[in-house]
Amino acid sequence: MDIYQDFKTQFFGRLGNMERGDPSATPDAIFKVVDAENPPLRIHLGSHNLSWVRGAYAERIATWEAWDDVAVAAQGASK
Image (cartoon, rainbow, N blue to C red; front, side):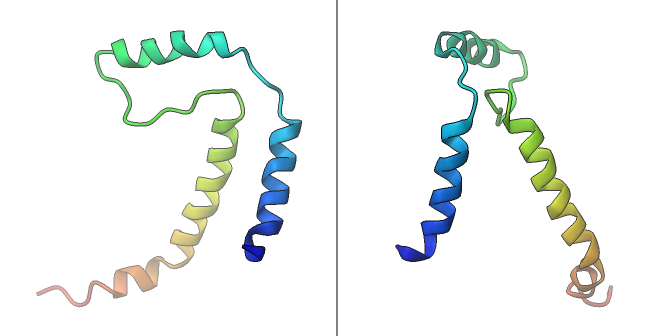
C-alpha cells in the first residue's frame, strides 16, 4: 500500500545499514533464556534494540503523563 512506502523505505534503509552480528551466537542466548529459573516473557536479542526501546517507551510515558488528568477523569467519581 502506498501509505506505508515512507515507512518501508526508512525501515529497510536502517536495516541495511545495521551492523550484523554472528548468527551462531543466537542459540546460546536463547538457551540461557529457556534454561533460566525465571525466564522473561519477552527479550530483545542484539545490541541495537534496548536503546531504541528506551526511547520509544520514554515517548509513550511522556504522552501518558501529559494526558493523565484525562485518563483519571475517565474513571469517574468514586462511589
